[in-house]
Image (cartoon, rainbow, N blue to C red; front, side, top):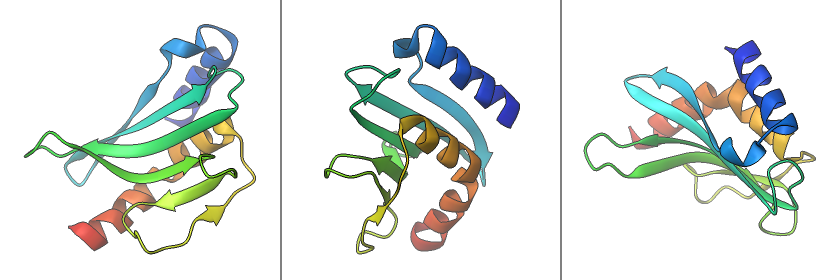
Length: 118
């Protein structure tokens, strides 16, 4: 899986990056997870970005965000959205490093979300 994702990310960096906005991560405990990302002004050279792991609630159809890395508060940080009271963790990552980190670690965040929200 990691080689497939790395290859897709390389293709996004060198070709039409704007068409690459999500990656299906797979299933975990009956839920299908996705990684979605955006960059502004472009995905190849973003000044602002957000990378999110989410799943679609099968009962409501709502998108449920689990964890997000973005630079919306003037610094790159991680929001563990299953723990709203947790302070933002500052990170030294760009968008593509954030994509790789959450692609590698999404299952652990999915598990933590399930522990809190069932």
